[in-house]
Structures are given as structure tokens and as C-alpha cells.
Length: 185
Image 1: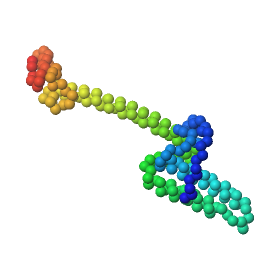
Image 2 (image 1 turned 90 degrees about the vertical axis):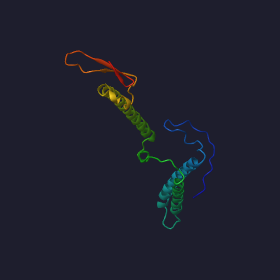
Image 3 (image 1 turned 180 degrees about the vertical axis):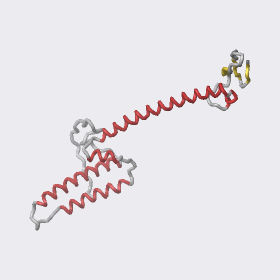
């Protein structure tokens, strides 16, 4: 692989509206910086290969061709990127690569995913609250119907639970309370 070119400090233009940092800024240190430099080198090598192919196709057949050297340069960068892949743990979703190939800003995909996740989160929070409310109502109904279950039902108040007894045949209503597991009339 060819040596990395030295970066010369230049005046940095303002940030692009959809980029986290400007294109002319110095890449970060470490493996991410190495990766950025190799990708920039690959892009440059591909550009050079394309211009060399166009220039060589206009030359006469007897002249020395530079295409082979340019292809080897591209292959060297690809081999370096492949070697780096084993040391890099960040995964890029295929949809982002497809968006870049189609000329779409990958930040739109990120924004869409965040919005969809927020909507799904709100929906799930509503489901959780509905289930908690149902569980509370069910436990209260079970305690009223089956007072012996007060010890095993979560969230049931063991100190005092008012129980409404069924109306007896004579039409009077009895009220009973359960205090510490003992019926009191």
C-alpha cells in the first residue's frame, strides 16, 4: 500500500449543513483517523484510475500504459481497508451505504430511524400503562371476590380491604372489611 500523504493545514471552511465536521479538517487520531485517510486515499486512487483509463484510451497502442499501476494502487488500498476491518468494531447498516450510492444523505436515514423509534416507544409506553391499569383492576376484583388471595396477589393492600358482600335474599346489604386477613362485620 502506498504511504499516506501528509496532511497540510489549510483554512477550514465552515461546516457543511449536513456534516458533523468540515471536509478539510484534520481526521481524528487512532484507527478512525487511519480509516478516514485510507478511504480518502481509495477515493483518490479510484479517481486517478478513471482519469488514467480515459487518457490511456486516447494514446497509441505502442506507448507505455499506466493503468496497471493505478489498478495495483486501488487494490492496495482495498487490501488495507480489508485488513483494518478486523480491528474496527463499528458496523455500518447496509441502508446507509445504499443511500450514499443513491446520492441520499445518510443523516435522513438516522433521523427517520430516531423518529420511528420515538413513536414506537410512545406506543409501547401506552401498552405498558394499559396493562398495569388492567392488572390493578383485576387484582382488586380478585381480592373482592376471593379474599384469601390477598397474600399472594401483588399490590393488594393487606391492612384493610373493603369487601362488598352479595346481597342476601332478604335484600339487606352487608359490608365487611378484611383487616390483617381476619373478616370483621
